[in-house]
Amino acid sequence: MRPGMKLWPQGLLSRAMILLTLGFALVQGVGLYLHTIDRSDLLRLGQAREVAASAMAVYRAVVVSPPDGGRAALLRGMNLPPGTSATLLEAAPAEMLPAPLTLSRLIQADLTLSPVPFHARPRDVVVLGSLADGVVQVGLALPEHGWLAVTVRVPAVEIWRSPLYFAAYLGLCLLALFLAWLLLRRLIAPFTALTSAAETLGRDVNAPPIAEAGPREIGAAAAAFNLMASRLRRFVQDRTFLLTAIGHDLRTPITRLKLRAEFLEDDDMRRKILADLDEMEAMLSATLMFGRDAAASERTATLDLVALIRTVLDEAADAAPECAERLTYAGPERLLLTARPIALKRALANLIANAMKYGDGAAVRLRPPADHLTVIEIEDRGPGIPDDDMERVFQPFQRLEASRNRETGGSGLGLPIARNILRAHGGDVTLTNRPGGGLRVIVSLPV
Ligand SMILES: Nc1ncnc2c1ncn2[C@@H]1O[C@H](COP(=O)(O)OP(=O)(O)OP(=O)(O)O)[C@@H](O)[C@H]1O
Ligand SMILES: [Mg+2]
Image 1 (tube, rainbow, N blue to C red):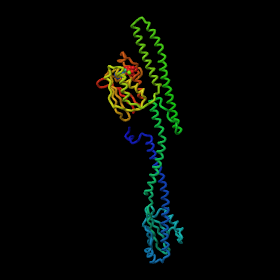
Image 2: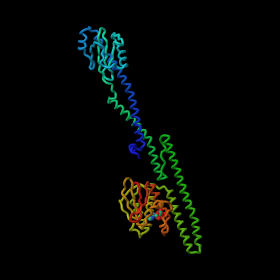
Image 3: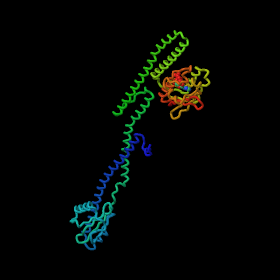
Image 4: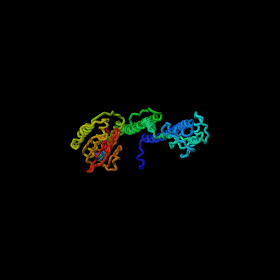
């Protein structure tokens, strides 16, 4: 993974939310910016009007008073609003830079519209400064001679700085994100359902179908999934049925062969053939049992796993009393879980039977559950299994050479059946060799 990828979350919801946050922030920013430009134009127009009105008010008062002496006194005594000042000048004011054309046009137009007879020729009016600088000076030529300069300080137009502006920005972004989150969550939920349904189907082909509700595309996906699951189920059922049918039909010819073998003259040959036929019969009945297990859909129930393990051990001890003291249990006294009791018992019995058959004893240890998973370890002191064969023994009818020649021949279905059952419970079974020799079977089961 590249270093930058760590910051990029994996979840669809988080990714979509990050992209939407950036998108919303951008769109809101542009929107508010346009709105601000619009509003500051309006505010500036108002400010220009005010400047023109103030200048005109002072000009009116000055023009009607006597030209010499009185005007300066009048200006001094005048109660001007804060930020506004007025002076008399000999020539047109020129300390500041000329105002932008738009502003001076605006002010000139306003002066022309004012109620006082001021027949301003363009050269009788000078507008200096700018709204952006916060100072505007209007110079007006007096009828006799000299000029009147009215300086007005205007507050800067800073809509950006207003706390309300950012509150609005944040508020809008959060609202949009909240709505997007609600929508996205609803859209993504079916994916999660589909994922867990696929997971369950992998463990249990007979898992119930998922709901085909929701928007059209989601409903179609659910329907397709259910169809796939039912085809898979049919496929598995057909195969199991075929297997059981062959197993069943082979029993008659085997019985016939056995009868015929009885008539063989050669004693040694007869014994060997009958032994082979017995083995074939045992394999067939194991196959039939396997088929029956697959077809039976046992109900789940809450059971005490410890009691189940003890029962299996007791039954194993009854079957082989000479091994009884080498069958031990260690672990908690009680552990409740939900499972299919007969199936789970068969799985454990197969594993414990193996330990007894190949290792002459079984030490069972139950670990207290951690992380919703409980672990059962079944250990023996037998020959163990070569590392290369660890997976092979889980395939049906696979037996290792060492055990193949034993008298206690099995059919090689014990481990595959156990794994099948445990995986259907959401658990699993794995094998490792013990350091001092012998096999350790590790069974995990969800609680
Ligand atoms: N505890 C064990 N120690 C050594 N080898 C084992 C052990 N358990 C299983 N095996 C090997 O794995 C093979 C497959 O085991 P599995 O239980 O599937 O069949 P099986 O015991 O031969 O026959 P079945 O259980 O159907 O009667 C066995 O034949 C044996 O060689
Ligand atoms: Mg076995």
